[in-house]
Image (cartoon, rainbow, N blue to C red; front, side, top):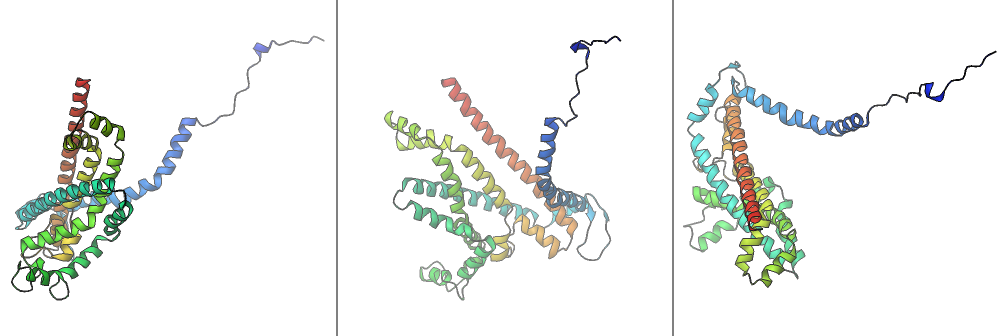
Length: 322
């Protein structure tokens, strides 16, 4: 009986059990983590936006009526509406005023809180306290303060000689605008202070010390060090403030209802009026919503490119000096 000997190299190695590649497992796990958020975004953002685009090209009455394609009649009707251009102009004016005041005051409060050592915690709490109140609640609070019957502001203005008789500050176009701006500044100044304070505290102290040793003045330090290094926080604050101001609705709806005589009508409030009050036409309201959405996209892209261009220009100058 002959035994056949096999060389170890002739024996085929055992195949390892089939396993899913590690990369595929990681991708599957990532999709599992992201799927709940993706589902929420799809249901509450993507589908509503697509529906708004669809509605903007159709007759879509709020109550009874026939629906049908009418593109571009809704858009032309919105542009021809008597309040379209006044609402755009007022919204832009309000945005500029609110942005300048909020960013400027927020930066000033951030410097105050950073430089103060004894009252730092008290000041932070005081300035941030209004942000804990909802915008609608704050608007109702200021509405009561501006009331000629129960509020203290109207009698105070009369005693100071600004008005003849007890008159509500919301009774004139300029008074309604600045009264609403006062509410927004009181409500959001602490929030922007916090954003800018984080940026200030991220600037290394050695940079300031080196500038002082070189004999730089406070203005030179502010212009040459603080502002350039604070630019990311300023960019974020500006974009948030501009976007929020362009979409202003709650404060004007509660305080002025767009009055007096439509002088404080914002674009978003006009969307509401077209949909539920004056026209009761969801198609026109959707068309205006699409216009607002596209304008926001353009404005944010322009802001990002401008800020990015400024950052790149500063980096190139620093590289050239080096």
